[in-house]
Length: 344
Ligand code: ARG
Image (tube, rainbow, N blue to C red; front, side, top):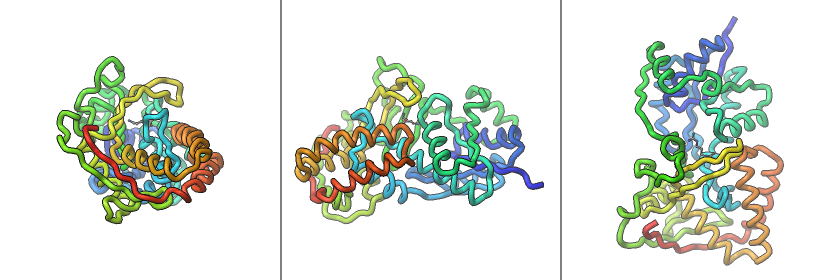
């Protein structure tokens, strides 16, 4: 009889690499890895790694375009910023990861999907709620939540299984996609401590940013950015370009003690240069193009929209209804905004 199959969302890091043999042993199943590019991923090298650690098949999918069109730009139009600070990069990526997992499991005939989220965060909820909404017949396995191994145990387990792992110590738990970079855990958990410079990767410290400002013009059509400085740019390029440009001026650093949906507070460091610039520009344009009543109602919708995204409720009728309201307001949001990038 053919073995059962599990599709594992695979980043190539220690946790999900150890999860491959662990799932094979503990679920007596074949493991297919799925690596999803949401912006910062070398798909081919991670694919190879998936095969090296024992996957029967290693799949990849470039979802950047979908991320931008179906998740990031609608969230930008909605003005979705969680607790007034976090532009929701990780939270917007998770439902798309859930959708890709469900599709891969269906096309490969797998009975289960697996992910590398821990039991403390929002991400486990976002992925599992997403799967439950889209493919309720699939079982979801969360090895890291189940196995009770410390980092040292994982390294030992990996060595015992001859996995080619280089357990390069990152001090933080990092997640990134086109819309931003999230860092949490380790010394960041002490809110009394200033975040160390090594927590940042996309943005310059203010002491190292240019002494002269940069001016920038962003053009929006119906609430969607389409041009930078008069040049037409498609979503992925436009966002990447703004990440580089604004990051160089130290724009987009966020230090946020946030309220997780699982009920704990967590100190997070975010870098979101493009998202910060685009939200600021979009809001500025709306101040000129929406009426007072629209602006006030939309502010409430923005907050609700951010909570919905943060809480993993993307695949709901409620989110669709909020989108319908937002889309209607955007029929006025066309125009060009001039910004000044200077010292953050
Ligand atoms: N706290 C943020 C959120 O819930 C970021 C999570 C980042 N995930 C990670 N594994 N570092 O959206």
